[in-house]
Length: 291
Image (tube, rainbow, N blue to C red; front, side, top):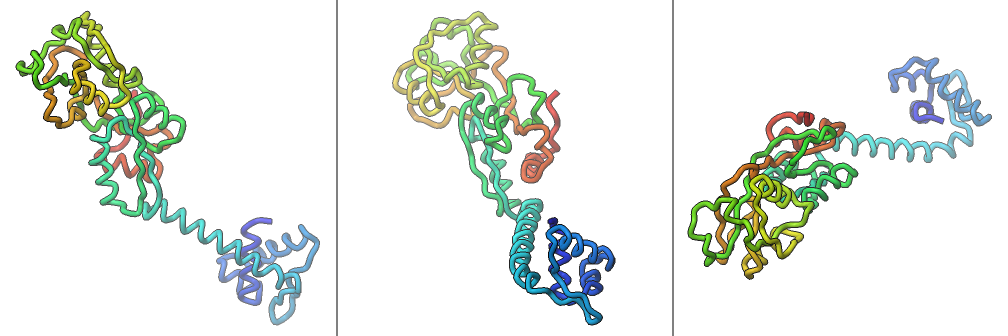
């Protein structure tokens, strides 16, 4: 049994003849006859009585009719749903992010351009964000990419730089800029190892031979800000994540390797599909494979 045979059966039933069914389906009459005959031979049954005035359904054909029409109705519903998804009239997008700041303007553009798309945001550190993208939990991601990723298409959304977060009354708060070397032996708190912030800051310290004294590892930027405010140590955060807390000040850090790109990412084989393609277009520019 195939869909073409079911469509032929429904057309013959509706029009009362093979010639009229062929006209409706834009097929030849022999093609329609062959579909019905194939269905009858497959199951050893008669579905129509052929006569000079057309084709009339047998008892079995009459019993089969409502079931065939239900199947074809479901198929039309599926086709309608798929067309709406193709045309971005409806659908879903799961976006994994390691920071919501760069993602929110992009989601705003998506909502304005395609209000039928329901978007959900999955937050985590950079490692968990990239894992969600690669295991299919997320359709696309906004993350800081610190190393080549040949399996991903990427589009740079901007750059961010690691800054120093410290209590307002701290001795270093009076400087407009703090040299990375000044943090040697200084008590600090840090994000977990899966965080791009921690990896970038640790690599920059290693280049300069700086060894801060880390007292706490924290799972979120909010926890890090609270730890700094309560005197557990200084913190390193991306500038756009520093927030606005009257208890804290941010200061620029001088040193190499403290800048990183924030990227829109997708698996290369999915970057040209549906809503993912639309997201890259709204981010300005086509998705390019990572080299």
